[in-house]
Image 1 (cartoon, helix red, strand yellow):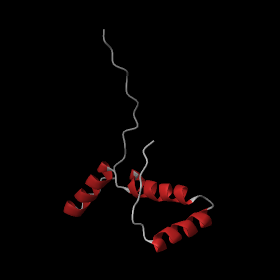
Image 2 (cartoon, helix red, strand yellow; image 1 turned 180 degrees about the horizontal axis):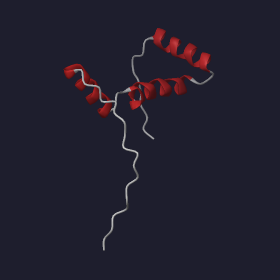
Image 3 (cartoon, helix red, strand yellow; image 1 turned 90 degrees about the vertical axis):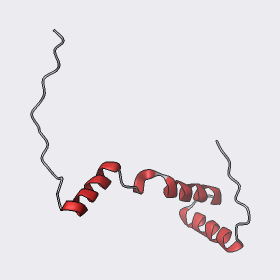
Image 4 (cartoon, one colour; image 1 turned 120 degrees about the horizontal axis):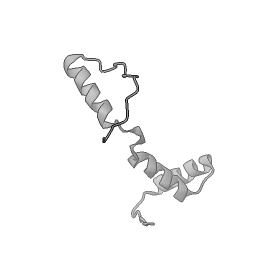
Length: 79
């Protein structure tokens, strides 16, 4: 697993990290990992389909909320 060293971290930032970690009941290192994960993981990002639908709504006011076809399909036949 990769290791990152953060140099020249201001004392007040380190102190705030320690306090925040204590409030969440974990180590400072675990707190920093959690902060980094939340910052870079795609959980809060828009997905491509959602983004394209929003662009379409903004451009033409079209709503893409349509009903899906619920009719079952037949399997392919190779005969």
